Length: 302
Image 1 (cartoon, rainbow, N blue to C red):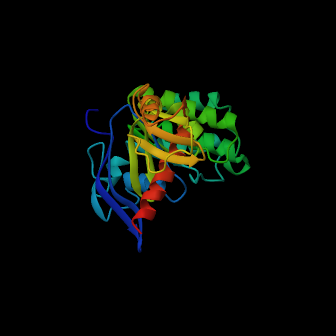
Image 2 (cartoon, rainbow, N blue to C red; image 1 turned 45 degrees about the horizontal axis):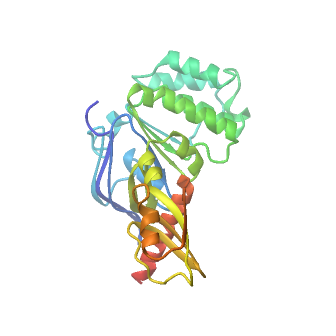
Image 3 (cartoon, rainbow, N blue to C red; image 1 turned 60 degrees about the vertical axis):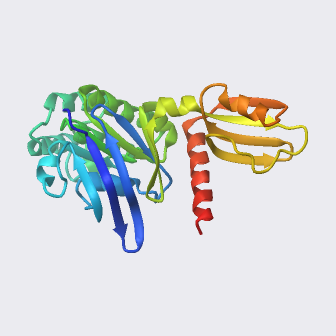
């Protein structure tokens, strides 16, 4: 598979007067696990539904595995799976029956993989779907999504509300069964800790706008938080190259900024800081800083 797994080119989608996705450009290569993060209402679910052909763009172009979801929806769904928190399962079927039913619908169905996943996720083939807990239904939905051997797996918060052990099992199953085969995964979630564990790329969405798209490892290596102590009150209006978020409290200036090792500390000392303490950040802390900056920028345009 040489073409992009997923490509958005200037994609916009509106619901009435509300813009859910705003002129988005995104390219997901094969073999990528992309974490799509943002607060509720940021456009994550809309983006995945556009990719699956459930929704159509008002402007721009969506290409999935080189196909147009609008024109080639049936062909596309043989190669793309969408797994969401709301994945529907027929309640009157047993686990065995629903796995067999799904297998009959998919040309690329891997019965051996389905059997292996049922066993690994400790699913009882004889149990009816209606008798399963929420976490166990999520495991069944995972089997159905992954055993079809998709070239692209779209995950829309499928583990929200589940206990940590079940979430770990679901995510590990996804990575082993999809990404190891060369397929791509786009995992949209507000559970940033889960994404940080499995993604190799991350995209930040805020109010439909793509604020960042790049390597997770590089982002965490480049972004640091520094606390700088000045002799007197921290000067207002400082320009710190690469700054994402900046606050002052008396003599202390706290800044989250992007830059190479040592660069941030040297900049702050050059601005007169007496003491500088620099520390790495988690993905969640970086996300909060970026969203805070986006809020300031939007307020500045009012």
